[in-house]
Length: 379
Image (cartoon, rainbow, N blue to C red):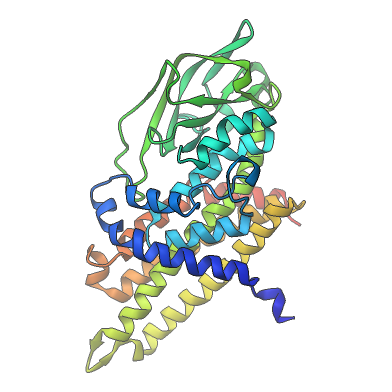
């Protein structure tokens, strides 16, 4: 019976190796990445060398073929020390999963292999007026002979400008609503593609977030993913899988904050004894640890369901993202409370972790939207 709740050895070995890499090659730069709002080049190089930047890509296209649980563990362990760096594997999976789900063999060969070679892949769905109501997007694509012309813009695009490739959702027939949306692959080098200024963000400052503009971008039909009008379905199916990666990211942030708070509580003395000896602090740490443990079980279960494509995936992916991100927000806030004044300044990483945690409650569907998804898919 115990084996039902223990990870197979290969996953624990993966955790050990990723944690060692994160501690040695990512953690030392996390504060500088955040304070200077710069892309975590050190993390990208380290993850790329280890084959972890896009490990989800099938082996036939140069990836490791890592399953959903393995990818979740990678993201969790990187987020434990640097939230911005964890967006490298997370965004690469988000951007390329529509290609994996709906692309042809030729399309996968064309774009997945460069992805494993270090080219980033971003996801373009949200717009200024189309956030939670994603089907209200205004970006247009019109047929032009055997090809298409793309016009419009996308908002809040993670790793925009760094990534070479973009999955873009555009309306080919606004009268059909969600059924008039088609997915395309756009390259940064395509004429007519440009980027807005870097957003000045509360958290995840090391991951560039920019608007992406499309001005009469000409696309051959081989850039189209799936059938015409099936783009919104592809987009939503993608999120059913990738919300698990946000849960893993939130889990990593929560675990990192818990680790810092626990260590600090044993070292910090007040009234001639460690503050850990005070019951009030013990209760806080116990609640934090309990919530993190629960979030981990739900996240790993959801990752397993994602890999198997079970019928209850929509519920579990929404639940894991919602619960883990709410947990991360609470745990990081409590960690700051335990550290007191030290928690509020950048000498310790918990204030950065709290700022990062907030976004996990918002992107890839706000937690209010997750609760709607759960209610509509009650098992």
